[in-house]
Length: 326
Image (cartoon, rainbow, N blue to C red; front, side, top):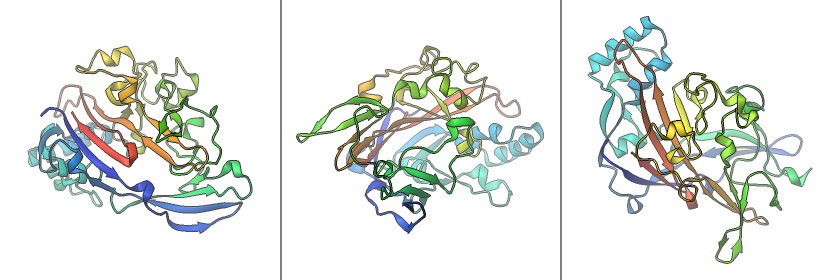
C-alpha cells in the first residue's frame, strides 16, 4: 500500500429534492432519491490526481463470481492477456468515479460493463422507488417505509433479517422518544438539544451472542461457524461479489479478527456511526463510518493464497463523506 490517504467527498443526497413524487394508497407517497457525490479538495490530503496502490477488485472477485474450474480457466486466460495483477496503481479519481478495467474490457460477454469504481455508478442515478407513509392516517407512521422497490422484503437474507424497516434516513416521525431503539446520548449544537442514536455493538454481534442475528450468517467458513463478530456479509447485495462491511478499525469485532490485522486501534469516539435528531422539527445530522472489505479465497488456477483488502468510507458528518484508503 502507498500509505494512508484521506479523501473527502460531499454527499448532497439529503439536500436534493425527491423525484417522481406520486400519491399512493392508504396514506402513502412514492418517490425516488437522487444520488450525488462531489470531491472536496480543501478537506482532502491530496488531489484526485494522486496515485495509490490498491487491490484489483475485478481480478480478486472472479473466484466468487465464477466458482467452477472450467469457467475460471477461461477467465484466467483473459487476465493473462490483459496483464492484470492482484495489486494495481490507480489515481484517486479513477478509484472513486470509475475506470475501464483492462481485464474486464477483454471479456466478450454480452452486457458486461468494464468500468469499475467505488462510486460508479452513483452520480446521475436514483435510489428507489420508496413508498412511505405520510402520517395523514397515523402520525406515528410518518416517513416510515411501507415498501422499497415495491417489495416488503429484500430477497437477500432469510427470515426477519430480510425485512424492510425504518425510514430513508432523511425524514422521521415527529416527537422522537428517548427510549426508541439505539444507544442514547444528548449532544448540544448551538444550544439545541439533540437525540443521538448510535449503531450498537449488537448490530455486528455474532449469532452466538445475539440470537436474532442468525440469518445474517451466510458463510460458515469465513464466519468460523457463525462465531465471528464485527462483519456483515453483503455479497448477496453485490451480485455475489465477496464483499463484507464493518465499522472502521473493526470496531466491536472479535479478538481473532483484530489480531490478524496490524495497525488497528478501534475506539468508539472516532469510529462509531450515529444519527443526531432534533426531536421536534426532525432535522438530523448523520455520521456514517463503515468499512468495505473484499475477501477472496485461494484460486489455484492463477493465485494460490488467501488475501484480505480493505477500503473504508467514513465520516459523513454534515453530509460530508470522508473516504480513507489504506
